[in-house]
Length: 182
Image 1 (cartoon, rainbow, N blue to C red):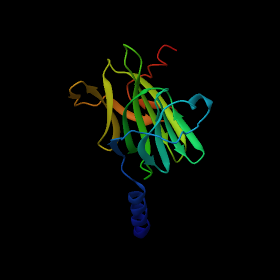
Image 2 (cartoon, helix red, strand yellow):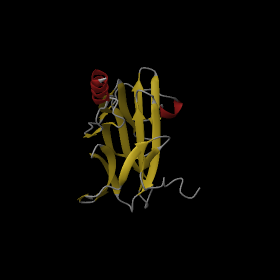
Image 3 (tube, rainbow, N blue to C red):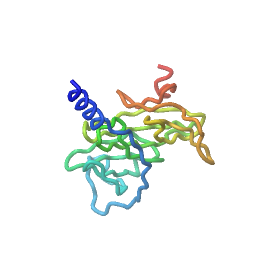
Image 4 (cartoon, rainbow, N blue to C red):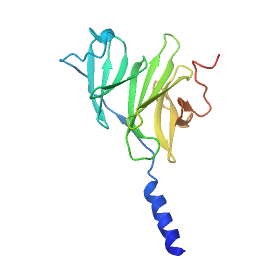
């Protein structure tokens, strides 16, 4: 019985990876060879962000402000938004990297869009948040992925709430701005 208990504890410890999150610096360089994604992008400027995650290269299409994840013939597109930050993370502790792209949309009213791309499941989940016209940054606190208010000069010391990725990106205590009136 004691051996079984020790084996079970070892299995649980090995299987439990920590949540991680790192803000990435990206180096934008224009792609010389055109990437023909479809007819809509035929004349668009495509920029390589020089980020690769689990075999997916990350690009920005400037004319449309889309972020693309491309691997071989697979192309996944994050919705429209002006790129602010990109985070490399492991939100579920499986040891596989994911990307969280934070962008903003809107004019006069700053709506933060967060798009989570999991290259293993090939799913993109998105959430939209209004944060009193302040940006949102992401970090790990006590093993949980949390959102912070990002002011003009610095970041709030208390987190807004925990971030989760289910059918959409959710921040605990915040309502998806684009769905609040529906």
